[in-house]
Image 1: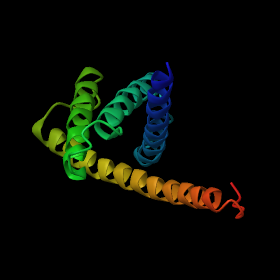
Image 2: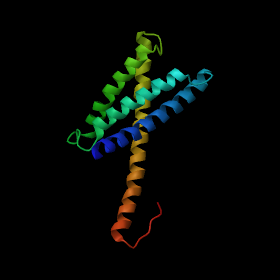
Image 3: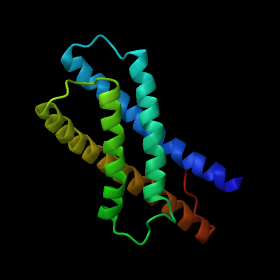
Image 4: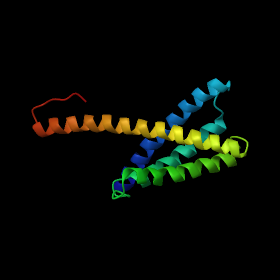
Length: 148
């Protein structure tokens, strides 16, 4: 039961960040395209994508999964099914016309946005990791006080 709660918390945390990123990205792009707002249908799609991506992220980056592989290989293991998931959603929900040029643009946008998300996750991990290291050092020194 404890492991299920740990996995759920990890997936939920990543899924929440991904969902927020999608909404922010859609809001920015939508404002440039003159869209009046985010549809309820898109919110559900974004939520499903975030949940699936959260699970894929856990599978690729959890402590025991693929730890012996180098980081770029794990990124590829993560990116490929995420791209396939987005492709299924793009076709199923008719996000854009199905032509070669549209798929080239879709793939380029995916790679760009995926790079931004990965960079943001890396910055977040470094900042929080640094903060937790400070707290751990303060705890080990037992006399130092560090504000949380």
